[in-house]
Image (cartoon, rainbow, N blue to C red):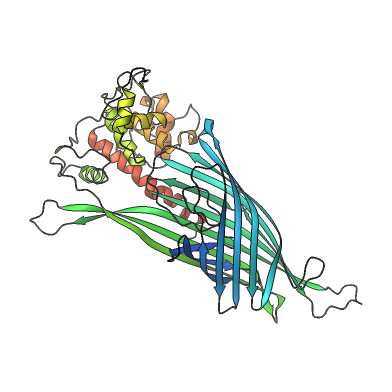
Length: 512
């Protein structure tokens, strides 16, 4: 899939998309603005090792992640402190990453090994020395035409001692972090209009401190006092695009308004804790319970969009949709007339859907000349290798969005509503979420829906991508007008940039 990539700053342990700078954070954290040092960012995380939440602030040095390697090593360096608590963290974490492409499924798996962890933690004069670690992490990406979806699991266990080792020590702290289908969630997506990652992680902390009243002559006297804590971490990082319409006040101006695209990042980290209350550095039966959050939102880019000059859309019911898509250059601006009530052809919709979900590169003259040489293969009999829209046909065909009719694409055929809906659900990769036939949709003209499109129409209805007509029909065999096509593609973009974003934040974390 060809995409515009917006580099995002992750918020939790080791995000896996190779084009992004990844962050390995163990206690949960929040990445802020870049510093003046290359690949260095302001950073916050919350430390629980001493039995209380301590917000640590400092910087993280992030590596550049290679895009074209199946195995690579990445290292992260942290310098964090909390002056009020006299707390410091110096950490260097190195990971070996193995990527494997599952070609038959169009999926990619990632496996992570924590090969080296150097960490020094000091809180109020007490130094916690890392003695052992256990780490397991894997991720899988399902690469669809419009959206790359991912999910994963993680387990991390670390054991620390103060003033000693497993045989002789003052304090011991064991921290276990779990994010899997039973104990938490690691899930996200990436598409043309944004990306997101949401993590829900459970942390258990078991500590031991010296018992000042220990009496070795008494059998039931304990040398160490044990304490237990639990923390729930919830983190959501989202990059998304907003489109703001700006009207123009002067009358002597060639356009009445235009759109501005604004790219934003929302970083939210929440933690709920249940920890012991310490008195004179000793745990008591009283509990310290609470919740808090960190947040860092920012605008990362803004750009003006082109102004279309169609002469036949003013006052039309789909004027706003057509103007919007033309501003994004999803539909062709080369003509003075759009023809909103004209039938939409297959090739026109191929162009619209392609531009709505990906950045389609222009073919070079060299590629065109090479494709016209004797012996060059032809994709469809009715699509010459120098066809004006060849790159769009190639994209929809190679990504299983649109197919042909045997050896023909039929680019000038009028497209139906059933075909448009099928194509959009194909692009989103959601066709397999529908039930198996036979079943009925909620529409009154369900009997008119072809079996080949019923599962797609069902899913489009489930995610509110289409809602049918006021008379509760879907009209699957009706030909789509150019205005209707613009409206349906606008709904697809809104679903990608808004509805999916809600799915991956509010519905998972459910606390915002």
